Amino acid sequence: MRDDAMPTPDPQELLHWYDRHARALPWRVGPAARARGDRPDPYRVWLSEIMLQQTTVAAVRDYFIAFTTRWPTVEALAGAEDADVMAAWAGLGYYARARNLLKCARVVTQEHAGRFPQDHATLLTLPGVGPYTAAAIAAIAFDDPQTVVDGNVERVMARLFDEHTPLPAAKPILTDHAASLTPRDRPGCYAQGVMDLGATICTPKRPACGLCPWRRACAAWANGTAAELPKKTPKKRKPTRLGIAYLARRVDGAWLLERRPDKGLLGGMLGWPGSDWAEDAPQEAPPIRAEWKTIAGEARHTFTHFHLRLTVKTALVPMERQPDRGEFIELPDFSPADLPTVMRKAFDLAQGT
DNA sequence: AATGCGTGGAC
DNA sequence: TGTCCAAGCAT
Image 1: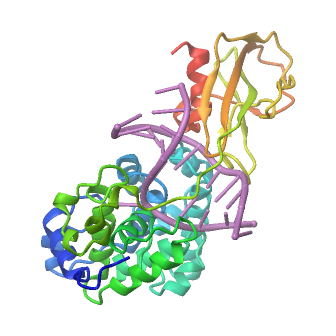
Image 2 (image 1 turned 180 degrees about the vertical axis):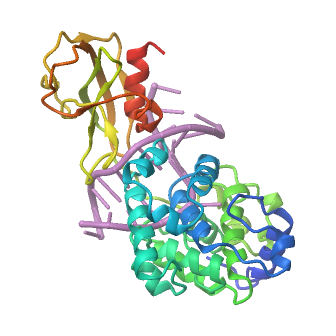
């Protein structure tokens, strides 16, 4: 609970902090350019926000530069081949984002004349754009005073207001608090400022309260509860699943790969043909007749909701033999870098690297 | 509305 | 090693 004697958090103080501490990032307009009236490119704001969903700035940076170099406009991205975009996204995770990214680029290009909608409600209709991303685009690209609520904002609000209700039940309460603070002036900078504060000062563990511009107005600081907030409902432990991956190499160097269905785990990505992944010992399911050799050890990988231990089998097959599943892809049409991480781990194990 | 969906870094 | 965590969305 907040003590009534405590000052209210001042959005302007946060903006001043942001002006002094904002990190230079490839999708941001620097202070000098902004002072000249430059606005961020909505395409770059949108692309960065999609990539940043549940993903750290450090992981996104190089992907963002690669994407904007190769596809500088939403029209260019809309015209890309699906396989090229999926390959470029490989390693970033949550692959539904990449499929929705392409869908969204094509909708914006074909149904909105290549211009991103500016209002929250229309932005929400775009594939892959939810409440957070719609608010972020409206605020950052168009200076619309929308309330942006991500994990950082939830944490900052839980501490400012010393809210002990556990997430996700606390979400509506924290959203109300965030809305009460959103300024009409520079809402885009403010939104990025609160998120930067959460990422660098108001961190999940060992928050640097001594450096916080909102310390005097923070109820959790006053009560000594900052480090234990926000409360979260406990999560379930992850089960372990087992599987087999079959890495067939044709004598000309081509690899046998399979495009995974759009829905579900690693949807739309290339992968090695294999068994199902289940808690019981996997059934043999070789995709082509061959002398299969089992590689010592296993490829281990952890997904959102289970651990995987993958047995890797390899075979060398003659030119004329036809696979039951998948298709051979010759180099350089295929690179291991095009694979999701679990498949690349299987490849690395087979190569002895 | 609870669940499924990746990955890499910090500790 | 394990656990938690990150600028969430779709269903």
